Length: 127
Image 1 (cartoon, one colour):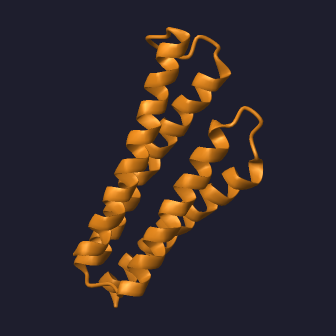
Image 2 (spheres, one colour):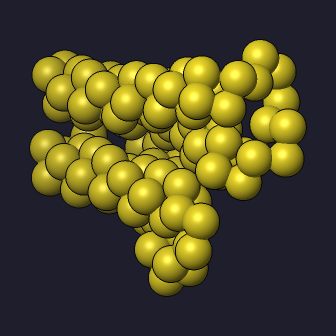
């Protein structure tokens, strides 16, 4: 049960970084709510929010797989894919001149993690 805990901790550190980035930019631009048309702040808010929208569900899926005694290699691969995907996506979406290939790669890794985890769970339940 240590594998998912490791990735949950690493993802939490990334989430905290994204949170602090939003706080820093809010202070820089003196914005309490919203983004007041500040593109840099808007991108930081979306990177933070997108992370919060996808990661909890992904970690839950990985946890359920671990509870079903999924192979170590599967959990390691999915955990790495999720972490890398979230790093790539957060980096890309945070840039004013967005490198779209990193954003796409980040989302593909995240969505593939979800898909493979969901299918593995269904396979374990049905067979």
